[in-house]
Image 1 (cartoon, one colour):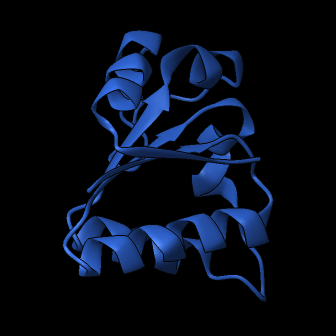
Image 2: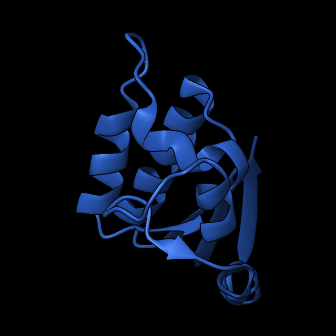
Length: 107
């Protein structure tokens, strides 16, 4: 199954759980793509003593999950492209939605 996850928050618990689900789905042989938008593009800045967001993002990437990030959302926050947040567009989000069997939204 192709799973699209749209993540629009920087809340540590929500982001952590979204990526935990992504890792679980990848381990079950599903294809998972996460599209970061709104405050979701700030995931690299999240630090939290309880929720290891970086650890879950790293695990997701190690399992070959793909991450895309809204370029306009990044630009409005003066953020540049990175390995975790490659700049993407609304066309990329639309393609993700069209290809996905299920689309989940967090935040």
